[in-house]
Amino acid sequence: MRRAGLSLIPLALLFGQAAPAAARDALGVFGSWGTFRDAPPGRCYAIAEPARQARRGAPWRPFAAISYWPQGGVRGQLHIRLRETKQRGARVYLTLGDRRFQLVAGRADAWAPDARIDAAIVAAMRSATGMRVETRSENGRPMTDVYRLRGAATAIDAAAVGCARPAA
Image (cartoon, rainbow, N blue to C red):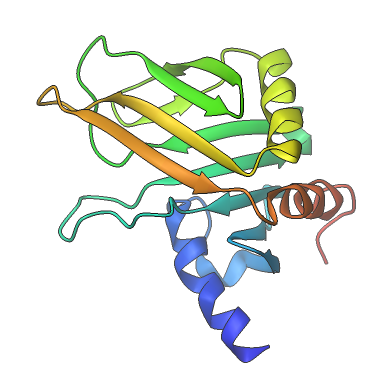
Protein backbone atom coordinates (compact mmCIF):
# COMPACT_ATOMS: atom_id res chain seq x y z
CA MET A 1 0.00 0.00 0.00
CA ARG A 2 2.85 2.36 0.80
CA ARG A 3 4.28 1.93 -2.71
CA ALA A 4 0.92 2.85 -4.28
CA GLY A 5 0.74 5.99 -2.15
CA LEU A 6 4.22 7.08 -3.21
CA SER A 7 3.42 6.48 -6.88
CA LEU A 8 0.47 8.88 -6.59
CA ILE A 9 2.71 11.84 -5.79
CA PRO A 10 4.09 12.29 -9.34
CA LEU A 11 0.59 11.90 -10.80
CA ALA A 12 -0.82 14.55 -8.48
CA LEU A 13 1.96 16.96 -9.41
CA LEU A 14 1.07 16.59 -13.09
CA PHE A 15 -2.21 18.42 -12.75
CA GLY A 16 -0.64 21.80 -12.09
CA GLN A 17 -0.89 24.06 -9.12
CA ALA A 18 -4.69 24.22 -8.91
CA ALA A 19 -4.66 23.25 -5.24
CA PRO A 20 -1.97 22.89 -2.60
CA ALA A 21 -0.76 19.33 -2.10
CA ALA A 22 -2.34 19.23 1.36
CA ALA A 23 -5.77 19.89 -0.19
CA ARG A 24 -5.46 17.02 -2.69
CA ASP A 25 -6.84 13.61 -1.68
CA ALA A 26 -5.69 10.46 -3.45
CA LEU A 27 -8.73 8.32 -4.21
CA GLY A 28 -6.84 5.39 -5.72
CA VAL A 29 -4.50 3.95 -8.33
CA PHE A 30 -6.02 1.77 -11.04
CA GLY A 31 -3.50 0.32 -13.50
CA SER A 32 -1.58 3.28 -14.90
CA TRP A 33 -4.27 5.79 -13.86
CA GLY A 34 -4.59 7.66 -10.56
CA THR A 35 -7.66 9.41 -9.18
CA PHE A 36 -7.60 12.55 -7.02
CA ARG A 37 -9.97 15.03 -5.41
CA ASP A 38 -9.06 18.68 -4.82
CA ALA A 39 -10.84 20.23 -1.86
CA PRO A 40 -12.17 23.34 -2.64
CA PRO A 41 -13.28 23.77 -5.32
CA GLY A 42 -14.30 20.10 -5.20
CA ARG A 43 -12.81 18.91 -8.48
CA CYS A 44 -12.04 15.21 -9.07
CA TYR A 45 -10.01 13.72 -11.88
CA ALA A 46 -8.54 10.53 -13.27
CA ILE A 47 -5.06 11.17 -14.65
CA ALA A 48 -2.24 9.29 -16.38
CA GLU A 49 1.11 9.92 -18.01
CA PRO A 50 1.96 8.62 -21.49
CA ALA A 51 3.60 5.21 -21.73
CA ARG A 52 6.84 6.86 -22.90
CA GLN A 53 8.22 9.40 -20.46
CA ALA A 54 8.86 13.03 -21.41
CA ARG A 55 12.43 14.01 -22.16
CA ARG A 56 14.59 15.34 -19.35
CA GLY A 57 14.55 19.09 -19.00
CA ALA A 58 11.08 19.44 -20.53
CA PRO A 59 9.19 22.45 -19.14
CA TRP A 60 6.28 20.23 -18.00
CA ARG A 61 5.10 16.63 -17.92
CA PRO A 62 2.44 15.48 -20.37
CA PHE A 63 -0.79 13.91 -19.12
CA ALA A 64 -4.34 12.91 -20.00
CA ALA A 65 -7.08 13.63 -17.48
CA ILE A 66 -10.83 13.18 -17.20
CA SER A 67 -12.31 15.71 -14.75
CA TYR A 68 -15.47 16.19 -12.74
CA TRP A 69 -16.27 19.57 -11.19
CA PRO A 70 -19.85 19.61 -9.89
CA GLN A 71 -19.91 23.34 -9.06
CA GLY A 72 -18.87 24.16 -12.62
CA GLY A 73 -21.28 21.67 -14.19
CA VAL A 74 -18.36 19.64 -15.58
CA ARG A 75 -18.81 15.88 -15.99
CA GLY A 76 -16.20 13.72 -17.69
CA GLN A 77 -14.20 16.50 -19.36
CA LEU A 78 -11.04 15.51 -21.26
CA HIS A 79 -7.83 17.53 -20.82
CA ILE A 80 -4.61 16.63 -22.61
CA ARG A 81 -1.29 18.29 -21.77
CA LEU A 82 0.95 17.79 -24.78
CA ARG A 83 4.56 16.63 -24.49
CA GLU A 84 5.82 19.97 -25.83
CA THR A 85 4.51 23.09 -27.53
CA LYS A 86 2.72 22.30 -30.77
CA GLN A 87 3.16 24.01 -34.11
CA ARG A 88 0.80 26.96 -34.67
CA GLY A 89 -2.20 25.80 -36.66
CA ALA A 90 -1.38 22.10 -36.24
CA ARG A 91 -4.40 19.94 -35.52
CA VAL A 92 -4.49 17.59 -32.55
CA TYR A 93 -6.08 14.15 -32.96
CA LEU A 94 -7.04 11.59 -30.34
CA THR A 95 -7.38 7.98 -31.51
CA LEU A 96 -9.11 5.24 -29.49
CA GLY A 97 -9.38 1.94 -31.36
CA ASP A 98 -11.06 2.77 -34.67
CA ARG A 99 -12.45 6.12 -33.42
CA ARG A 100 -10.60 9.34 -34.18
CA PHE A 101 -11.47 12.71 -32.63
CA GLN A 102 -10.17 16.14 -33.58
CA LEU A 103 -9.51 18.15 -30.42
CA VAL A 104 -9.54 21.89 -29.78
CA ALA A 105 -6.05 22.96 -28.80
CA GLY A 106 -3.99 25.77 -27.39
CA ARG A 107 -0.21 25.73 -27.66
CA ALA A 108 0.32 22.90 -25.15
CA ASP A 109 -3.15 21.70 -24.12
CA ALA A 110 -6.09 20.09 -25.91
CA TRP A 111 -9.74 19.39 -25.10
CA ALA A 112 -12.81 17.90 -26.72
CA PRO A 113 -14.80 20.57 -28.59
CA ASP A 114 -17.94 19.99 -26.48
CA ALA A 115 -19.56 17.85 -23.78
CA ARG A 116 -21.06 15.45 -26.36
CA ILE A 117 -17.58 14.61 -27.71
CA ASP A 118 -16.24 14.35 -24.14
CA ALA A 119 -18.90 11.69 -23.48
CA ALA A 120 -18.04 9.84 -26.71
CA ILE A 121 -14.33 9.87 -25.79
CA VAL A 122 -14.98 8.53 -22.28
CA ALA A 123 -17.24 5.80 -23.72
CA ALA A 124 -14.53 4.83 -26.23
CA MET A 125 -11.91 4.78 -23.45
CA ARG A 126 -13.94 2.14 -21.64
CA SER A 127 -13.50 -0.42 -24.42
CA ALA A 128 -10.10 0.52 -25.91
CA THR A 129 -6.75 -0.76 -24.65
CA GLY A 130 -4.80 2.32 -25.67
CA MET A 131 -5.16 5.93 -26.67
CA ARG A 132 -2.96 7.96 -29.02
CA VAL A 133 -2.62 11.77 -29.19
CA GLU A 134 -0.99 13.13 -32.35
CA THR A 135 0.05 16.57 -33.60
CA ARG A 136 3.16 18.38 -34.85
CA SER A 137 5.70 19.91 -32.50
CA GLU A 138 6.72 23.54 -32.79
CA ASN A 139 9.61 22.57 -35.10
CA GLY A 140 7.28 20.57 -37.39
CA ARG A 141 8.19 17.05 -36.21
CA PRO A 142 5.36 14.57 -35.73
CA MET A 143 4.59 14.27 -32.01
CA THR A 144 2.70 11.30 -30.57
CA ASP A 145 1.84 10.32 -27.01
CA VAL A 146 0.45 6.86 -26.30
CA TYR A 147 -1.55 6.09 -23.15
CA ARG A 148 -2.35 2.68 -21.73
CA LEU A 149 -5.98 2.45 -20.69
CA ARG A 150 -5.78 -0.45 -18.24
CA GLY A 151 -7.57 0.87 -15.16
CA ALA A 152 -8.83 4.04 -16.89
CA ALA A 153 -12.54 3.13 -16.67
CA THR A 154 -12.27 2.37 -12.95
CA ALA A 155 -10.27 5.56 -12.33
CA ILE A 156 -12.86 7.63 -14.22
CA ASP A 157 -15.67 6.02 -12.20
CA ALA A 158 -13.77 6.73 -8.95
CA ALA A 159 -13.46 10.39 -9.96
CA ALA A 160 -17.19 10.60 -10.67
CA VAL A 161 -18.05 8.97 -7.34
CA GLY A 162 -15.45 11.09 -5.51
CA CYS A 163 -17.22 14.25 -6.59
CA ALA A 164 -20.72 12.87 -6.16
CA ARG A 165 -20.31 13.27 -2.41
CA PRO A 166 -18.92 16.27 -0.53
CA ALA A 167 -15.22 16.23 0.41
CA ALA A 168 -14.63 15.34 4.06
